[in-house]
Amino acid sequence: MFRQTLFRHLSRPLPRLLSTQPSAAFAPAAPTSRFAGVPQGPEDAILGVTVAFNADPNPNKINLGVGAYRDDVGLPFVLSPVREAERRIVHAQHHMEYLPVAGSRTFVDKAIRLAYGEHNHHVKTGQVASMQTLSGTGACRMAGVLIQRFLPALDDGPRDESPLVLLPNPSWANHAAIFRDSGCTVGQYKYYDPATKSLDFEGCVSSLEDAPDGSVVLLHACAHNPTGVDPTPEQWAKLSAVLKEKRHQPFFDMAYQGFTSGDMEVDAASVRRFVDDGHRIVLAQSFSKNFGLYGQRVGCLSVLTDSQEEALAVDSQLKIIARPMYSNPPIAGVRIVEEVLSDPELERQWRMEMKGMAERIISMRTMLKGYLEELGSVQNWDHITNQNGMFCFSGISKEQVAKLRDEHSVYLTENGRISMAGVTSQNVGYLANAVHKVTM
Ligand code: PLA
Image 1 (tube, rainbow, N blue to C red):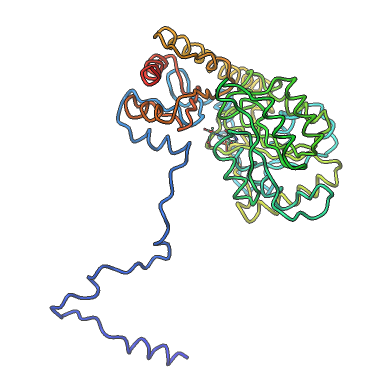
Image 2: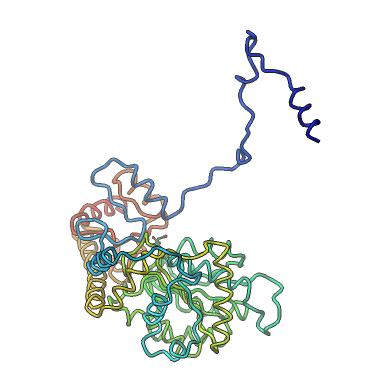
């Protein structure tokens, strides 16, 4: 064997180093990489906006693409209790060992209490399967795989097909990719009416009624992304009844708890209503926005079950899903949340500053609408102040978005979504002027 290999090597022609003929070594190289055929993919619909924004030299440029909160001078904002927690953590000189696969138990316990409330029966009796996740995205992805692997057919028998996950139309741009990559089939239900720039509640109910029984229905707990349009408490009650009737599986994505009303408890009302109505919900929580921990990747997935045994079984499978994907989650961000939520004074400050963020966004809505009216815009801009949370679904067309970018260096996602969290009292006048010009 060795002799044969040696022979093959020796019998190769020697390179013609001294020859005057062009050598094969200088001819255009045949691709050697196995990835040479990989096609160029498009930039992400949301994060790609930041890439374009960063490349723009205009000093007046405004990034209203990604939903990242800015203070009133347009800078990234770190909440003061978060800074204080960080200081204490550095001072404590903690170890940096691995967390368990399911993450920090202390953090997860605090996270689920924030969502379900202090006195929830399921939480108190250990009937909630839960884990720390790579923020809200990771929670959705873990849920997608759990659903794909384990959601049974309605008669509890094996499924013939991949589970159907219904998203509101429209939804966060990443939802479809997350559930599709998890192996689920993605569908839509009616949600937003572009004519009224508000909820198409009748359409929503009827499309959920017409969907196959036992579908998974993704609901935005509050501050719907991208529309800023949430159901009223009465509408939530009706949706809860429809989902019950149809035996749909509710999946709540709660990425903006606190951003609709400024109050964490008020914004959890939809989730708590469904739980009180007896739904066994699946819930993804993100701490990116309400704690301002974007890059720390802090999130939680929970699954409400019927018993402790069931919760333990689901927990075990969540760990089996996570271990080969990323092994265990990061430790730094959860320590911050734990520190803040373990100190009543830091928690009080956090709730107050969280409310401050929500209020600043609301005041920017009023200012933007006011400026547009002052400029003499003939359009109706009531939806700017009627919509909730971080985003305004402006109704600005794709062509107008391109004009805003090319002529004014104002960056939004193509669907006309404005991240109100990036509007400040300094740039709102410039923004209103630009919006007015492209919508005249
Ligand atoms: N769910 C919804 C509805 C979201 O809008 C986002 C973030 C997430 C989950 C996930 O956020 P996380 O992983 O940071 O916790 N949406 C942003 C950012 C803010 C993004 O697209 O990644 C947005 O601009 O829409």
